[in-house]
Amino acid sequence: MPTRRHFLHGALAAAAATLGLRAIAESVMKAGDRPKSVTLGDLSGAEVALPDAFGGKVVVVHFWASWCPACLREIEALESLFGEYRERGLAPVSVNVGETKAAATEALRTRKVTYPILLDTDAATARLYGVRGVPTTFVMDRAGSIGVKVLGELDRHGLRRILAKML
Amino acid sequence: MAAERIPIRVPFLRRQRALLEFALASLLRRRTKTVVLGAVLTLIVFLLASLAFLRASVRLEAASMLRDAPDLVVQHVVAGRQDMVTEAAIAAVQTIPGVSHAHGRLWGYYYDAAAGANYTLVVPPVNPPAQGETAIGAGISRSRHGYSRDVLAFRSYRGEAILFTVKAVLPERADLIAADVMAVSEPDFRALFALPAGVVTDVVVRLAPGVDPDAARTKASGAFHGARVITKHDMLATADAFLDGRRGLPAVLILAMALALVIVVADKPSALSVEEQKEIGTLRALGWSKMEVLAAKVWESLSVSITALLVGLLMAYAHVYLWQAALFAPVLRGWAVFAPNLQLVPSLDISFLAAIAASTILLPASGTLFAAHRPASGDPDAAIRQ
Image 1 (tube, chains in turn brown, red):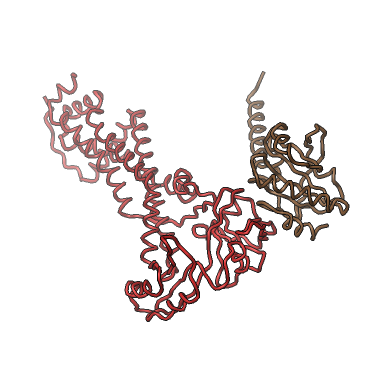
Image 2 (cartoon, rainbow over the protein chains, first blue to last red):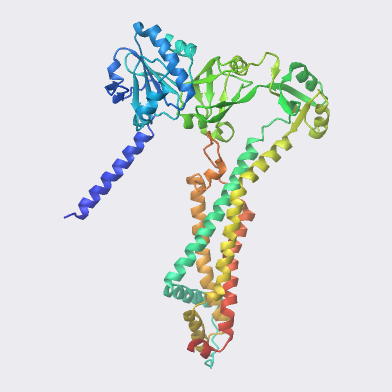
């Protein structure tokens, strides 16, 4: 039989959950922060722990969407630099935000991408990183801390300038 | 037939206190009706007073914002659109009699498709950022979650990425003028917009004390072909027109609220219930004079309206200055992505507030007098027996 105390506990739990969700919704990642590990699926269905799966490497976490031409140009630039800097420890990852696997696959159909493409279908990871628009790119150092957060479209030269300081 | 009145000399204030006590007891007997009327009046006062506070504070902000504006700004218009100003044109403006100082400014808008927003890029004349660095407005920081050490990537006129590392976020108190501002170095600005050396966006002019701005404007208009001169007065008028435009919706709201007030007042005569009319008849039958009955009814009206006025004003003050006018902020911000936070300084528009107070107190009191006049003047027996 529910008592007034049960009701009170329920209300407190609901309030705490609401505040917790609000905290997640307004999360912001800044340079120097270490994002907690999240597990996302890739286009083949395999699960990848981000950024733990790339420990010891310079990880570029690139948030993108299929409707964003600048994001697709960035994926091409990342693919090009991946070939160039793979041996030096570069690990790019493009995280599709809020779309289906089919939409992401279709957007990349004519592009050759050899580095991991992850799916953040409910945009929870984007919220965790405080992403307010795409493209947004986080470059993490080998210790897993955010070295640089880039808002807007990077080209090969811009990426190279940033990576030169971290690789 | 009214009872014979025994003349008793009661001091005026004591009599008024007794009438007020009676009025309050009468209001308590009709609790629901009193609460509803009071709530409607409070809501009307709250909305009208919120607009009055907001309007006065925003005007104050705009005036302080333009206090340090230059006396004249000279642009170069070619084929109806703004073009760059050359160094020769700046020199020509500098030689105009009465001009104390003239220098070129570099500023421009940059549309960022990723943010769906316009940035205002400026090159500060004093202490500009180093090349590759920027100081951003708090609106940009809030909207894009951009902080110190973050990088903003822009595409230049030639299609290359130009990177700006955030070195500082401008304080929120500068939001009204700098929410969307990015201060950058001159080389970065020229590279981004592919501007050659020797041209600037416009010229700002300081006049010597006592120089007539209109006379200087006439001379500056002829300084070079296509010169367009904007005076400080023009800037103030534009800011005023902008605020008036943004007040379009609030103006509609004011009209609607004023109409609601009129309806409340106009409804009062017909809203005098049978119970109230019987009460007036009983009072008259007990020997109250017509003036005493009307005074008691006016006290009833004043008790409700003054309470509504005070509560409404307090709520409006809290709404505008503690909660940054949360109800009206979307109207003021429009479609701006890098909208400023409204850090409003309290300011009073006395005439507007006096108008609200007058209409909240005097109109209902007049309506009450009008409504109570007939039963108070008629046959008490008829009023009791209806």
